[in-house]
Length: 152
Image (cartoon, rainbow, N blue to C red; front, side, top):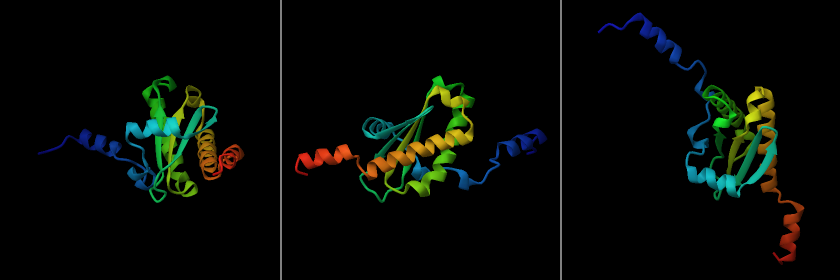
């Protein structure tokens, strides 16, 4: 069976033009709605203009850190939302060695993030992720005072 020459051109264009090493591995993705809900509701929140980062420590610290992305339709049309999601996945891939293991991180994107360039988005996502992990790793002074009052 012969294939039309135009079909071969379409297949060539559809093939990814970047190495798979740039992709965020499946083990590092939040995939279940219940997990998103728990991270956003019970996690530590850090806000930066255009993005809110929620970080939660996992029960088993040996498990890989997972990232999730919430980009609502208010952010823009599908092309814009997917561009932001792809950029955040690339940033998450860069952050894996820096953050370490044992955390769940969810990025909630606000409409003003649509106007951000890649470098600004990277800086804000990195800032929120690192700060959230630090807050969990080193509880605040108020938390320490509460524990000392309760005798813990």
